[in-house]
Amino acid sequence: MDIIVCFKQVLDPDIPARDFKVDEDAKCVVPPPNVSPVISNFDEYAIEAAVQLKEALGGTITVLTVGGDGPKDNIKKALAMGCDEAFLLSDPSFEGSDAFGSAQILASAIRKIENYDLILFGRVSSDWSSGATGLAVAENLGLPAVTQVQKIEPGEGSLRVERVIEDGSAVYDVPLPCVLTISNEINEPRLPTVPGILKASRKEAPTWSAADLDLPPGGFGDGGSGEDLLRLYIPQHESQCQIVGGDSLEEAAENLALLLRERKLL
Amino acid sequence: MTQPILALAESADGRLASVTAEVLGTARKLANESGAAVVTLLAGSEVSALGEPLIHLGADRAIVVDDPLLAGYEGDAYSSVVNGVIEDVKPSVFLCALNDVGRDLAPRVAHRQNAHLAGDCVDLRREGDRLIVSRPVWGGSAMAEVSSRDGRMQVVALRPKAFPRAEADAARTGEVEARPAGLDAATLPVKFLEKVSVKTEGVRLEDAAVVISGGRGLGGAQNFSYLEELAEVLGAALGASRAAVDAGWVPPQYQVGQTGKIVSPDLYLAVGISGATQHMVGAGPSKNIVAINTDPEAPIFERAQFGVVGDYKRVIPAFTAKCRELLDA
Image (cartoon, rainbow over all chains, first blue to last red; front, side, top):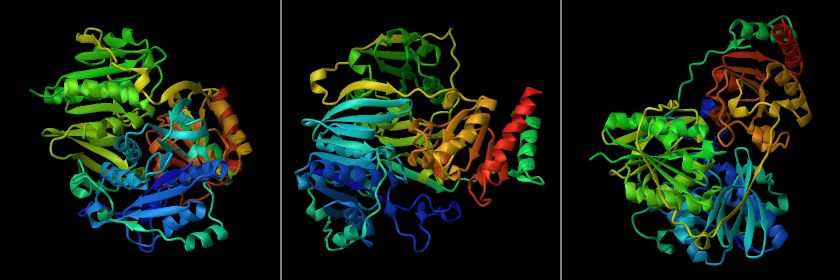
């Protein structure tokens, strides 16, 4: 099975809250010094799902990511996890693309790759969490899509997939080729091994610019977005935490129970 | 004439889903401000009796699409129905809930309609002709206020429990219209096969007045037994952080957070949970948060009203015993 995985590079949302800063005038997040972007969290599960399918069925994995001309650490990581080929889609005109804009860029790259059975995304990105890119790529390519997938069972020309939902799962039969967005229940992403890292370091990850892709005009980049970002700020939580103590931890626990009782919370 | 507001209604087990009152309440409020009409769409199978209750919840017109092909949610079928109604009704806004349906449907509809997509809306206000949507980004570390450019339609997915519910008013009148789905099974590539419900024992997380959640700090699956005993004493539901779910200690249905459940109990006890922003998206609506954690610097203490700094293995048994004593008295 030939698989394409699309991942996004984002500022790690798990950095300590005190290091998370925004520039309210520029309406953008200011990464702390020396903190490089990471693979968006759910996208790592998509990469792992692809590697497991390849291990079971054979085939190839191509990874795509839009934007950034910095170090290719994240691409190398995906290759080290077991992907075969990678392309960076980067062009000044791509900057400011929203989910739908990125989807146009990715769809053009996927058309250029031609041979694929399955396209995987993480269920949402760690930054804007719209969950829209994968669905928009599916629409651009005229492919069926299932989101929030926690299990994939390959069949004859189709997949049986489980979509994680609030009180269990919904099961679908999806013909290939198709788009799936992957949820974290599906697997535990592996850490790259030393041989994997060495192998990845010898691989090239070519950059495709707008000139390399057959892109319809207007739908990507900052001007292509249908969204006006009016304000970006860090919310202030006014909660004052009352730390309950005592002569021992056990007494603190009892004091907590008494306090909650007094406040009619028990 | 002011364009209508289209609100997506949902059914569950033959009744209107609880979140529908939130979506319709919000649509009604926006409509009252602008003079627009509220049109609601209910798509499903065996839902034809639910039109009138939608009028009672604030719709001026309820479109009910009843078709066996809509028995289980499937993105192509549902978006085809919604897009058909949008082309007919020409709303300025399409409102739905950010649940399992809305997370999949809103992006599909927004893309097809070339609309502005605003998911995870926690607050809405009108400014002229457009809506300003407040939504958390970076898992809640920052908030964004966004709106649509150049007057295009807006698709807004409302975070459950962030908006007040509409009260049913049996005296309200409106038009109920049955509409064919216009679906052909042969043209729908994805087949919905079945829904598998995972039964959780005890109180439902979403409905519980008290929730006790465990995180990475518990250190292992067996240690959830500390919380189970307390949950029994308090009649509480058990929850977990994503770290505990990813570690395989509890099933995914326990997860509270951005991609798990959003809870709003009177009391939320976070045990061994650091309070990552994406967890607080799910726990944040709780009226009171109590944190028990060994790390006094853990972000959970910035969001909690009450806390104990220390090892839960000592705190929870003593707390459980005291609660039992107080509640038995």
